[in-house]
Length: 151
Image 1: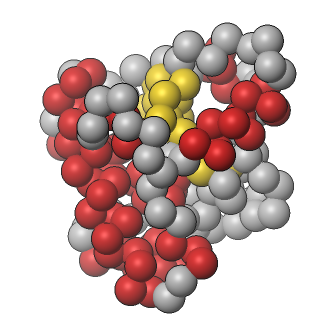
Image 2: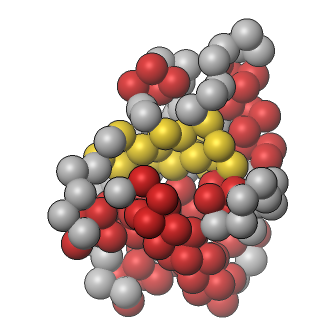
């Protein structure tokens, strides 16, 4: 199974989600490939935010080799499941892909935790380091549900 996590810049939320889900899938013996992307171009080629790396490292997950890339329409064909970490990200993806694109593989990330939810994972980029732990924990709970649902 190929899963893509998408946020705005691909340096905070989606790298954390990629790291956690890949780690959990590997531990569960699942043959999953998890990747991440962003809808904007501001950080292409950059490593995840230092606080994203720090919180993941403190939990035994190394995301330092990840590099930000932009979501492209071809991703709709490449991945089996695409999870937007926020509603505005979903809307941006739809615009990038073209409004007639088949978005059936794209879901709101927190809808996997609470079915039907359109809530967004808070973007910790706008705050200080203290905002990264609650985001990590929310993403981790959701990744546990994803493993349960799709294994």
